[in-house]
Length: 341
Image 1 (cartoon, helix red, strand yellow):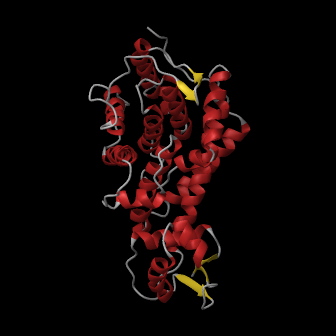
Image 2 (cartoon, rainbow, N blue to C red):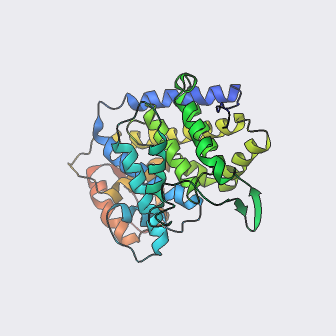
Image 3 (cartoon, rainbow, N blue to C red):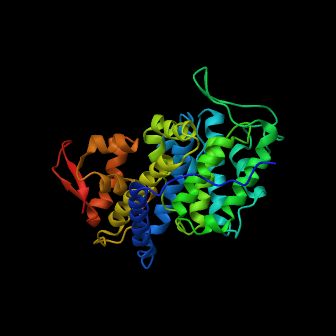
């Protein structure tokens, strides 16, 4: 029987700064809920980005526009496994978001989360079940990490749940708890496959459960995917240093702060101006506003490429946005540029 789990980390000055900034940004976002007009589009964007970037970290080839199309219920002529990974992640996130936050983290919930992530990708006996054969983490053909053996996985997972339900964890900052759980679960590697996706979804669940992302509006997996090598290196560095999680938690804290700042800018962009004309935004138009919110001024060509669409399709989306004053167009040729109104 393994000893009770207790994570090892220091509350460094950098970590405290990240936690303070994350809490302030989270409080700012919570303070905007009086005007709920931005919540639905921001939630939808977070769902798409979490599914896209979490699956892409492990090699899923679908583009962001393709993932958006799947979220809209469209069928795509793409590789079936890639599509299934994304649809499964949608299902896992929707289950997390629709489920009332439980008082305690239960083993059966974690197993169900894995089942949602892996259904149709693993055999029925492997979905939502602990591994029965040894597994390893590879870089090419080289083994870079050997997880605990199959017989140890259930007990180690239960000790993690035990810590998450402890008074120590309940008194800890939500970002710290989520980061610890992410690293510990992916290191136990308790399933035959899908450990990374399950661990990242579990992190999202814990942030929600602890009241840190109650509106489900940010996607920290985009930060992890932006530099995948660093993501994997940070996981391994903690293992190489006796499971000291200080640097790992600092890294996750950095990612959450960066992600919350992007979310803040998106909310500000969506609320920046009341349109002169009434307009109901489509999802692609929301994406146009989001990209323009992150880039002060863009030409039509770069904007179309960033959105994965043709110039003619972009023009149709822009016309009502320009007419309403939400987007400002400068110039009248192909050299026109666009910015938020």
